[in-house]
Image (cartoon, rainbow, N blue to C red):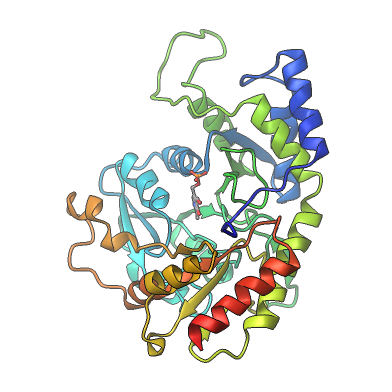
Length: 377
Ligand SMILES: Cc1ncc(COP(=O)(O)O)c(C=O)c1O
């Protein structure tokens, strides 16, 4: 079976993790945590980083930082992982949804404006499968309406966006540099992994302090076991940060490899009728986190049937997200009843991603591509 993903760990990871074991710094103190936070923040063009235990809780910390009141709304795409809505619901807020763009699968930025009400507090853009969201219109709306941005950059480590392309000074900026608070996951299938892990980035020193406090049970500096706020234990360990730091040292190599995998698949799969491949807008650098494809209904198959046929040929795949508005857990709580988002509903049934791990060989890419041709012939 060719797995849908496999992390590629190297000698430096082993050295750093061994140092933790040798020195006994295996918990949530130790040199690697701060170094990883500082270096990841700098890499993304931010001032402060707070490492946490995964990407889901990174979003939860970010939402908690905004101090949402019951009924406060956060606009997000329906085509995303459940973590985005959980963060808002746990904070007492209301997720408000928009559909996605049929080409990039990222949030349809034109729909955001019509969803802004007097209860809106934030917008949560989510970069999907390696391709950035069109951030300029979001930044513009956020500024005009005084809204915060929680940027979910879990799937786009190192991806870039051409900001200000309609101005005299356009500039490429890394994803994760746009949010009031920007969140990452370092789960094992991400470009950079810590096994399980996440981070919240910001340029605001007060928000940074708040993220650190929330992560660590809201202990106080002057009177440790005295608590004035509800906190969490969302700490990352030095062992995990050691892994992340070693990975970060070769991020350019990792991105180059992901882009190479994307281009190899593009060459082999382009021209198949009724198969939409990942794209790259002129204002975006895609890092092809996952090589995602969208199958037209004309092929007489949905993604489940297509995935089954690939599995029979020794190839593992994953279906696309099912939209947040179709999740029973939210219907039970009265959210999104009767709401319809046709693009998301279609791609949730017709989309899947192919093996995209860093350990993929050219032979495996050929094998996967031939199987796709065969199934769709
Ligand atoms: C867009 C997005 N946000 C958040 C997460 C949650 O990250 P984690 O699995 O580390 O909790 C993921 C996970 O894949 C994701 O794809």
